[in-house]
Amino acid sequence: GNGDTITDPSNIGPRLQLTQHKAAVKALAWCPFHRGLLASGGGTADRTIKFWNTNSGAVLNSIDTGSQVCSLLWSKHQREICSSHGFSENQLILWKYPSMTKIQEFKGHTARVSL
Image 1: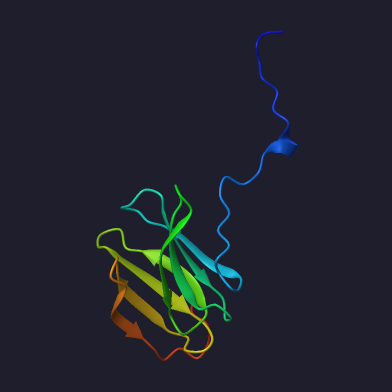
Image 2 (image 1 turned 180 degrees about the vertical axis):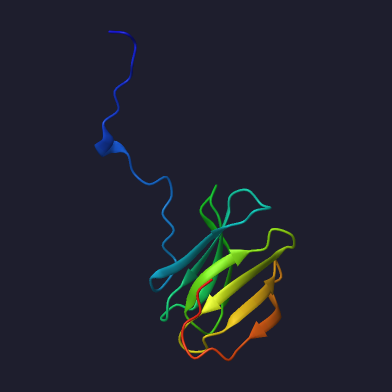
C-alpha cells in the first residue's frame, strides 16, 4: 500500500454529548469572544439558557428564563447575549454576560419571536 489509512465511518461518533436540558433544544450560539463557549436554549418544558465549556463538557451556568427559548444571538461588540422567546411571554431579553443580569426586556409580541 501507499500508507493511506482507511477509517471505518461506523466508528465515528459525537465528540461530546450535552444532555442536561429537560426539553428539546431550540437554540444554539457559539460565543464570538470565548473559544469553546456554547450557549443553548431549551423548549417550553425547560425554559433555560445553559452555557457550556465544550472542551470539558461542563455546564458553566444555567438560567431559568420563564419562557421557551427560541433563539440566541451573541453581540459581536459587547459581552451580551440576546434571547428570543415563545410560550409564555413571547419576549426578547438582552442579557449581560457572564452575570446574566437583564439589561432590557422587550414585551408585546403576540406570538413566538425568532431572531
